[in-house]
Image 1 (cartoon, rainbow, N blue to C red):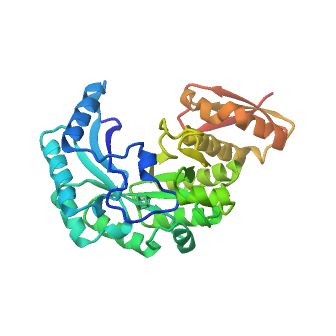
Image 2 (image 1 turned 60 degrees about the vertical axis):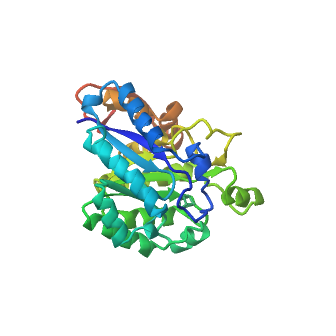
Amino acid sequence: MSKELIIPVFIPHLGCEHRCVFCNQRKISGQATIPTLEEIRSQVGEYRKSCSNLNEREVHLAFYGGSFTGISEKMQEDYLSFALALKKQGLIAKIRLSTRADYIDAKIIARLKSYQVDIVELGVQSMDEEVLKLSKRGHTAADVEKAAELIKQAGITLGLQMMIALPGDTPEKSLATAKKIIALKPALVRIYPTAIIKDTELAELWQKGSYEPWDWDILLDTAAQIALLFQKNNILIIRIGLQAADNLNLGKDLLGGAYHPALGELVKGRIMRMKMEETLKNLPSNQAYRVLCAPKMLSQVKGQKNCNVLYFAQKYAQRLYIEAAEGINAPDIQIKPMI
Ligand code: SF4
């Protein structure tokens, strides 16, 4: 079975009494209305129809956007019983949803189990109490630990989402959050560097000069170190950065901060730079090197606009000739001095 086909159903701000400083769910999901069951059914139909390799995909129906387990019980049951019916009809294989840590307890878990929910993603954002407070999350790191345990004990796949560069955050605090997340043993994670979205408190803080986005270089380094930590611990990273959406453009709802439509690619390029640097920093400078990689890794190894090549030329006076070579397995690279 190849990758999942995820059908996202956005439930904007519904069920959430909170107002995290960075969040305007209506803007992020690009949608302000609540989907009806009929709309969900036709969305599932459209996704299935337009998928060219449906037989090889595992279809997931995902309730994203708000805090699903915070909406009224009646509405949760309506959505979940509908999803379960789609599952029984074989139209979807798995049900997944995202929620907050303080909206998980034994009763809620029992409900999710009874509707055969497969994956629950918790918005952790940070495991640092000060960052949580400044971001007005309204829950503690201990709430996350408790909820994560309940989800795993119920046999539901656990996903955790973290943010980087929230108010009060530092690279060290973000790395510490990643380590605490690893200790919770999620199956999958998402990494969201903080973007500044219109009509949020963060936008006001930024306009007043009370919030400064991180320098891009520091942000990419931190995101790459975190991604490496997750990879080393065999935790699947399913997303880095917010999904590119029409309204997430500068001048529209996006005001600034850490958003780039290809942020994940930039972070992967930075990871390759870090891996190369481990080897190249011990090799003579003023020398040219051939870097060989699998063809599909070529753009990552070079970095966006050849930035990795420029970096080594400037920092170590090392000239790199990066080439695709058959027989090298991704993500391995081979570095050889040019003779
Ligand atoms: S809990 Fe989630 S939906 Fe609610 S304000 Fe915070 S980020 Fe937005």
